[in-house]
Length: 279
Image 1 (cartoon, rainbow, N blue to C red):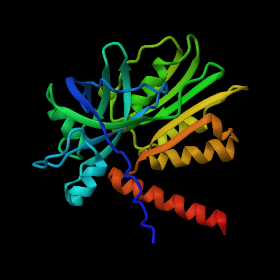
Image 2: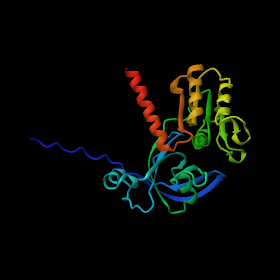
Image 3: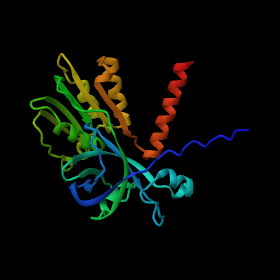
Image 4: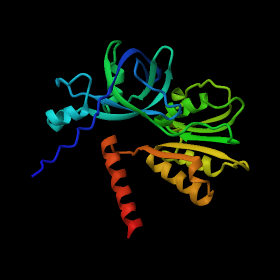
């Protein structure tokens, strides 16, 4: 009897990046600049990487291969994966810039960024991504919170010269505002939670609902906390009837859940939707 040949193990080797310098650009945003010799820019402004944060005291193979890790180590010793948007990449210097929201000891990635020192190694996979501002659009609408700021900043700086953009961003207060370069014609409005009586995201929803869109091709990017993203999604598709292929929209996170819990919830919801569509 023929013996089945085991399927080849999937290569899940990560790429190596080394911290070059860090900078706190606002009270709650830390910019980490890394040397990433193997990073390949895919041309999108929302390109993201999966960062791997190892557990203290655990030795991992180098290069980091997640397949090997999962075959040889118990699950409680596997690295924790977190998804982050690339703020920028300089092909000449090989500088990969990633911005981290930092709220003290909360979470994994933020505290890592706060403690990062030149020479520290960070393993990553990617990039992924699928959005970039297109020259054909008569208006670019960009909406998000702090978690979407790196992608929004990258999009603003990639706008074609003279391209019109309306940008709505919600942050804690004026100290969290950032400045962006670029050659587009940008109308940027900041909303501050600290001085608002509205719930998180309400100002963004109201701003989008009250916006008069021009005739013609409008390209939209809406990312951030899942609650307000879902409300804007329904408005854009159900009320405005915007073409789905002109809207990049995603909930990066949900209040009360870490990335693992939020990804599991999204997967469960997607499975239920597929089952309902097939019934």
